[in-house]
Image (tube, rainbow, N blue to C red):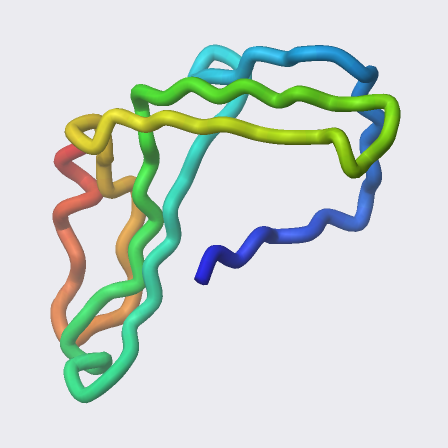
Length: 93
């Protein structure tokens, strides 16, 4: 399941095709601990440093689409919290 964070402020985006990437925005993946090993794991914020997206905004909201590609080798741990031991992986990135 993909969970999208909703923001209180709404932004109007003009109809058309918009190119997105690391020069214009930040793409992050958040993980959360769960299950039997939850106490030992970490909640992570992982940054995707190489990605590109296309946002096609139609005059009708039903005609809006987004496409995203990301390089899996560009994932970098940005922050780690929780767990039984400190998560030092994020300091190396």
